[in-house]
Length: 161
Image 1 (tube, rainbow, N blue to C red):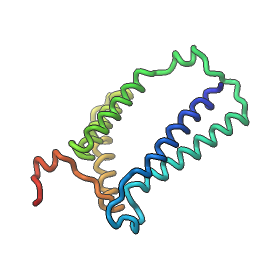
Image 2 (spheres, rainbow, N blue to C red; image 1 turned 60 degrees about the vertical axis):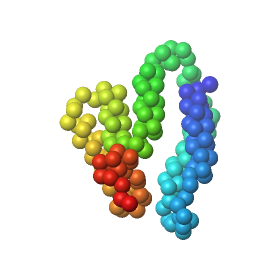
Image 3 (tube, rainbow, N blue to C red; image 1 turned 180 degrees about the vertical axis):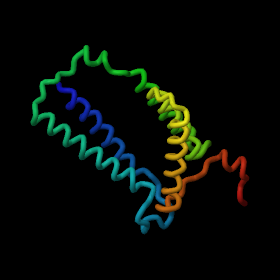
Image 4 (spheres, rainbow, N blue to C red; image 1 turned 120 degrees about the vertical axis):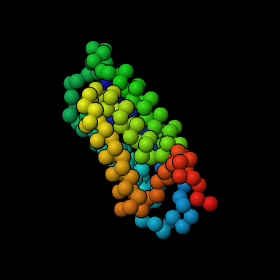
C-alpha cells in the first residue's frame, strides 16, 4: 500500500470522528439564530478534512505511485516527537479550563517550538504570546465568540457576584 493511501485513510478516519463529534457541542440558549456558534469552525474543519483526505485517497489510486511503505521508511520517521506533541495536546486540553485560553495556548506553543528545536527565545515568546493574544482578541472582539478566561483569572480577579 502506498504512503499517501495509508496517510489519507488515517486522516479520513480522524476527520469523520471529528465531524461526528461536532454535533455533540452544546449551543447556548438562543444560539440557533446566531451566524457563528461554538460548532461553526469545527464543522467546517471536519468537512474540509473529509473532502481533502478523500481527494488525496482518490488521487493516490489514480496516480498509482510506486512509493511503497517499507520498514526502512518507517525507521526514518520521528515517532518520539509525535508522541511528545500528542502529550502536549493532552496537556493543553486538560489545562485550558483552569489556566484559560491565553495562558494554556502560550504554554502549548512554547512546548511546540521547543519540540521543533527552535532555540531563539525572543522569537518563541513573541510568536507564542502574539498568536495567543491576537487569536483571543479576534475571537472575542471581532467574531463575538466568548472564550472563558479560566479559573486562574477568577482566582486573581475574583468572582463577579
